Length: 294
Image 1 (cartoon, rainbow, N blue to C red):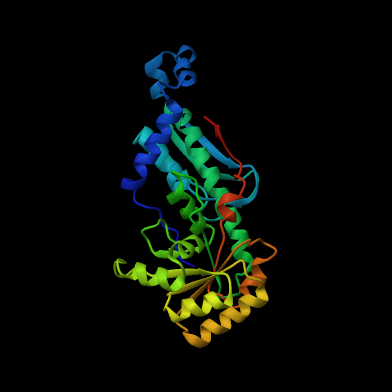
Image 2: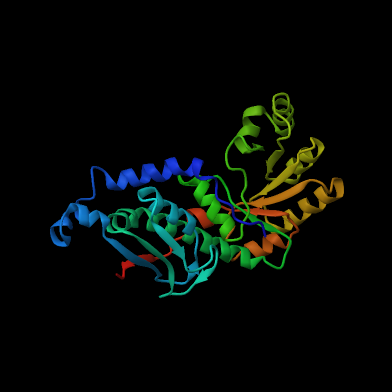
């Protein structure tokens, strides 16, 4: 399994700062108001407290490093200590992290940090469920570009935490010729020949196919990856046989209406990859909470 790796902070920090600014706005009125009961504004901002994060249901934990960074952006002295490894399973009621920082940092960072961790942990949990269905087979689960605008890098990171593999991150990662491209070009061959004229090295070409005729055309045009889209498993098995017999170096991807009930049957056709948006687009958030303990 590939290790899940976050993009560098120089890429993520601008997003995290924007999300903190969105929540804080012109100031945290609740936290600022606590000055009235803790002895003045200066004391309110400097009072050190410790909070614990608690899982309220079973799942796979993701984004603890992201949560840590959220608090550090508010206060470099914030001390965020995970109590569970990134990508590990948690149980309901389990403490998964402790944070020590000034009171204002804890309260202002709570919602942004929790929202990100709950969203990404939900994706990691759902991805893990899909991966477990085919864990004994050589087929790998990959994600898609169906992501939340602004959250793509983190949502795709959560996929890898759950054991999945990233498909292309954006349109510039690889050439993927889908049904609308084929229609626009007038066929698979015309699409590939046209794109090859301007495609930079070393990008790969993937072609979406829906029939054995299209599979044959993609083989003849030397596509690097052939996607079998919405094919019945029996037809998919025939397509896999055609591709393997013609060129064993061509990678094969299956896609379309993949569910926990169907993923194993699809994997057993012999495809290399199964792509689905479900773990990102259909996963519920993993319920987490923060409690100040001292």
